[in-house]
Amino acid sequence: MTEFTLRSNQPAVGTIPEQSRLFAGHPVLDRPFARKAVFAVAGTALIALCAHISLPLGFTPVPFTLQPFAILLLGLLLSPATAFATLILYLAEGAMGLPVFSPHGPGGTAQLLGPTGGYLMAAPIAAAVTSLLSRFRGGMLARFVSAAVGDATLLFGGAAWLGLYTHSTFRAVASLAILPFVLSDTIKALAAAACAGILQSFRKSPVRPDLSRSH
Image (cartoon, rainbow, N blue to C red; front, side, top):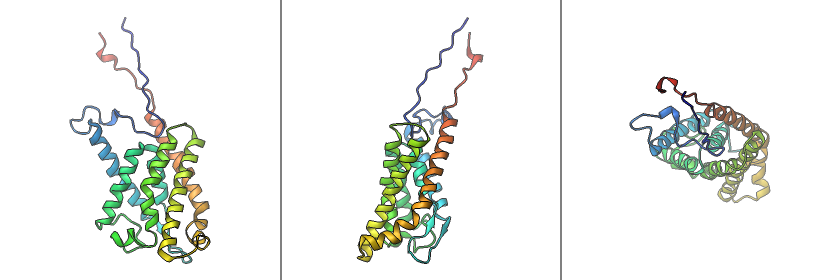
């Protein structure tokens, strides 16, 4: 009688496992660096897609987009280093002129250095902070708090840059760059936390032993 013992080697909350079953056995993608590169490129595509779901608001230069949702979700799913690298890659793509930023802007470096550029430049830090905080505890509440702190990083980074860009007071900038988005960004943080929990539940599903290989 053959005894099967399954080893439990689950990664910390908010990280992609080092040995992904999805790419197991692939001559290239089974390598850790190659997997991280795939996740990074796929992550930039998700952010670009969400950035194009955009609605301009007449009273502020900052449009409403789903970009924060994608940034927070990646922060909850990837390791801090991979999340940071993914957002750096996204900014590099936009700076090179690829249409990955919100369409309500000039694109390229002009958008990166424009009035809303603070949100973009704060994105790598926000994703890394979200990922780092989510590693300490699991559960929906912990994921939401991590995402909320990451989103606050985005909002205050964007507001600080807009204040420098327009030479406005913090009170004036807050009414344009923070307060109009508190409710919608809270919903985005909740959605990111819920989606991350669903995706992590699939990843943590038990692996059945291959009985055909027993002797």
